[in-house]
Image (cartoon, rainbow, N blue to C red; front, side):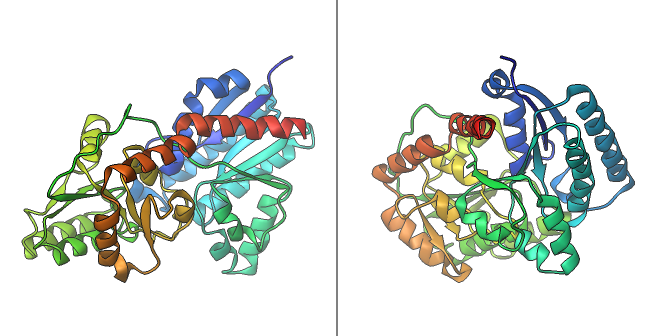
Length: 366
């Protein structure tokens, strides 16, 4: 029996963000390749995080190039199923709407299943802005299969129920350590690791560093900047309040350096209010190292964490209270083991891989 032909149109690095990291893994997975006859097309749009959402002649050219590549692959490869990383709003939505005419036009020649994988939230906000957005999104979703990161995100689609079915596919991250080693020490080390976008909460963590500067608490920041203004404000704040001995910034890190910083941290802190926050991979990485997490009730974060693995706040004004709770209750060997086990049971790349394959195998049998 020949393998099902799967065409995957997805984001890949660079830039490095949640969707591109997942796309990198899908396209390199041997198990997925063993189960399906795969072809991959990369959605190229932005070179850096700061470029996302901006219009340029280069992006227009890349959209035309992408359109032609998809058309050519549909004609030559003739897939049975299409997997597509969908965007929720803005210029990227209109690009995807244009590309979807190819998928849906192809249906006139072959009976196929189309899957849109959403890595962010914000559909409800977008369709609430105008009837045009609502009607175009309904058209975009008509008769396709949704892949969502968790059931916590289903309410985002209440106004646009023209899709056919829903599948849930929680993200996973690579297992970088064989086991964890809890170290009991006098000082507390907090880690913020994500893109340095203000709405993701790094500045709130910096303000927390100021509020706790007389305590034995040290703050580690790592990530790439969205713009120079935010970077300058960050370092000026450190200088103004004499936080040099309490705050360290590493820039964008990966590999051994990333591993080193996770291992020396006690708590991962991520007070995000990013409008499209859905399922932060960086929280999964923290759990894989046995770190409890302080975060917010955005997107799927309450699905990822429970009261044994972290502290979730509804108001950013409660951040210092959350820190005190985490220091008192969650910095211990038992919590580290629990966080690590939670990761191993739910959020490994192997589990993601199995769930991905299961979705497309189940849709074959339906």
